[in-house]
Image 1: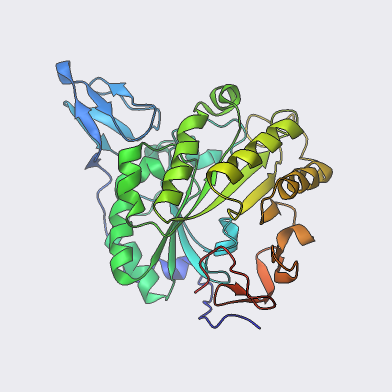
Image 2: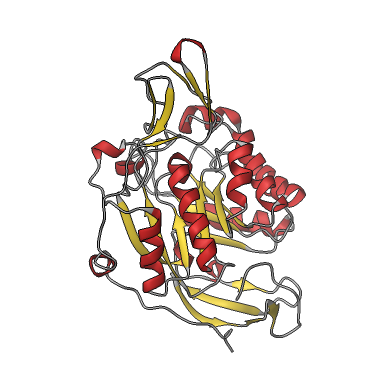
Length: 362
């Protein structure tokens, strides 16, 4: 028996873009979080890089520029990607399953991940991509017109188009449309707390569980990401975690065990974890895809350590895609890829034993 909900039909993007008609949004906007320094320099306060920029300089993210002593973003109303996806693709398995989501991105990222699957937009600046022109109001209007209940900020790193995301999230919240943040979690506390007021769910990619790997492979750091996860939980934002397992780098069983223990102790055993399969990409094309056995071992470690909901991503077709009740062990949600075959979560509880299942179900 499935939950009672409205299911939505995928609309081809070219049709979606026709209603309402496209406008010409501004691509430049003064940044919301920065401070002015001597000599017309500015310090960006958006992410932990805290870039100090002289006039004409652009931050690590490729979108924030010091123009005459003020910080401006070039990532506003100029998305390079707009798609309609199933929510399961984000991946979010415990948030309004079987619904569709309007997904969007602007070029740029504050990381330099050597394996990035979306490197053709994340490792570019907005002036290097083909872009649409949509104001926040226009995209929310389009979601509204087509009865799409969720907007996801995704594909690149949404923190770099923070102003666009925040403005759109506010409008969406007023319209009853949910907001989802798919992120590397590398955002400062003050802008994060403001964003949390309008967020409904997030998937945070904890890429590595050592500072050395974060620095060497992604150009970031671990601690701010862990802090973001805690802040999301403290502010009642639905949270799921992704960990891409890359052979020879973070497939060590002890590292995996440290990660899942941290999640259990700091976020709780109910937080869903997705161990995702790596495929050769970008600057790591010399590596092999993650062996399936490695993924299964990681999942078993997480279950043995007491996590309740552990999945394997990028490898469809097994029980590792399904949700089981932590109390009675019965199959609750059966998935094949992004398709749900059965859903036995009723009003947020197990159909068989009435155990409360972590998530947002209606």
